[in-house]
Length: 297
Image (cartoon, rainbow, N blue to C red):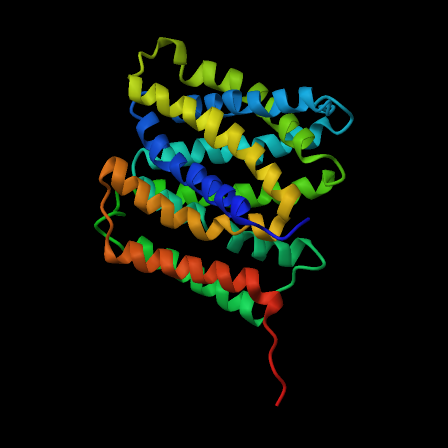
């Protein structure tokens, strides 16, 4: 790995924008498509760039190998469930809220890492970061202008969806010896397989006449926000490592708020701003905790 240069930072910003833009596009897609259909189209279209890359790089896809149960389980928890919950929740809340709620994944992963790994235990700064970040989320839930009795459950489901990403990440440690492209391609294949019958039974998408806007949004969600974004993530990880790539966590909620305001005119309340600041600072403390040393007097 090398020191990041200007191109690396530009790619990091592009990745952040792509992932942040997913939320307002989900909102647009829900105008025509059901949440299961959105999840299915995301994994179907998202798998294409990844599988094409694996083909040209001659990376073997092991979706149906002896580890198929792990791929299927991770595909279900890391893709099927969160994609469905996010799409279901965003239909009833502002997309900028989803961007903030989803940005809590580094905080949730730190909590799970404490209990399920040997080297990721809590320390003072991690604890402060987790408390501060989730305090911002609790404060956000008190914003009666945006979250009320009618959509409280939807907001909660988005938060649960973010936790599913973290659980899926922990499960991925079971197959951490495999190439990222192979793992991603394999779990996408299983997510498609799982969602085909569910989508056909519950929503019958072939009977839908979607708007042009919703169609464009769902194609973007699959091909760009899922497929292209994963490929861009691979490049950043390979060149600069996980710590550099993880900085997208700071940018996603900020870009999510800005983009939802530009494209959907969504309301930005003072509590939204306070919440996103608390989350970003909390993530910063968690990620930088290893660099902080308490001086002995």
